[in-house]
Amino acid sequence: MTKAMYPGSFDPITLGHMDLIKRSSLLFDEVYVALQVNPSKKSAFSVMERIDMIRKSTAGLKNVKVVVAEGLTVQYAKQIGCKVIIRGVRSNSDYEYEMAQASTNKLIENEVETLFMVADPALSLLSSSMVKEVAAFRGTIDSYIPEEIRGFVKNRLDRK
Image (cartoon, rainbow, N blue to C red; front, side, top):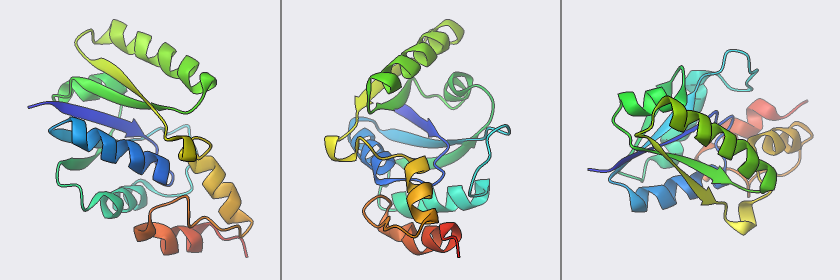
């Protein structure tokens, strides 16, 4: 059985994230969407809210599991039996950052590989930060986030 892990902060989960999750679910027997908890990062949504949004968004994908991961990503991947970490690449700067991370991970846990997946061109400019900014100023975010969480995200991020 091949297992992969797709880590991130998912604050909130976007259609770009969903694209990678769906594509990964076709390549691997199990895909763990791992919510990374970074105490030094200020999030718009709590850990439980993000888990709930990810679960609602991935409910139709039977081989996708949602977990909370603390500590080093590569060590958590190994702990849960994942041989592959999935990372999305939208631009050259993403690639440079992800390459440094993948190299470090390889030094820490040699048997865990990193798979770079190129973002869908239609979603390549999309990020959680952009979604939060657009929503904060009452812009339309419907084409950026899964339908299952739109109302919740809009209510939370709308500055009145």
